[in-house]
Amino acid sequence: MFGLHLPVPVTAGAGFLFAWPGSAGLVPDVIAPLLLATRPKTLPAAIVPVWVGCVLAWKLTGKFSLPLALATVGGAVFIQIATNLFNDAIDAAKGADTERRLGPQRVTASGLLSRTAVMTAAAVFLGLAIACGVVLYQAAGWPILAIGIPSLYLAYGYTGGPFPLAYRGMGELFVILFFGLVAVCGTVFVQTLEWRKEALLLGAQVGLLSAALISINNLRDREEDSTTGKRTFAVRFGSKPARVIIWMEIKLAAFLGLIWFIFELPWQVLASFPMLSLGMRLSWGALTMPEDRGMNRLLAMAAGQLVAFAVLFHFFAVKL
Image (cartoon, rainbow, N blue to C red):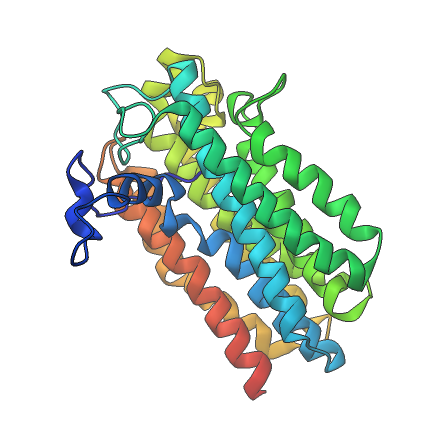
């Protein structure tokens, strides 16, 4: 979904990457491109909301269930993978992935896997997400349906269906809502059976940091997207607003951290440190770098910023 580079050389003969004695590279020629299509480096955007949501639930109530945490993170990761696979197949069908692409190779457009194979794999991962959802429904009831059903649909509807969000300039809003507010608040509810206003604050911070990923991705791909009908925020409003929105996402996430003082969790303010250090480098790069492959480094830095926030949030919650 976010187009981070996976440094794995996937070719028609990529079987050697997974070969074992006697395998003769049978399955690996499918596994290697499928792994590429899942975009593993985007998965922190699914894992971090559940991680910090569980930490917050424990900090507020002392409650933590490992089985429910595993079911929650499993559901989030499987939906994320399904979203990435649908994105790969649907973008190829719409002609959105061309030879001008500056991001990593897409397996459907490049012919490594057929569209049917990628769509089938996406459906399998949605099935796994539903299995995790059943566990969560048994523990937390109908709110899981209210969260899960739209999430399952939007795995496809992000790039497919009658109103594909990614093609309507709504990608950032989708990420803030579902990879931030919904994911964090839902995780806290599963753990505590309570809706907490602290979860809204944490969800907003995580959502904004995750949205920075897709904003950088769309800025990098702005010229290509403008020729293929993909009307992202960067395409609709141009380069300068697209650069400023990245700066705003990072700074707003940092300043929202000050609200932890109001919730009498002052040390959690320090979890915003990556946004004031690494975030400065990211913001400067977003404002000044050319729209080329060099922005892949910014994507990696943005993912690192998200993970660093989670690490510090966890550390200060446990130690103080």
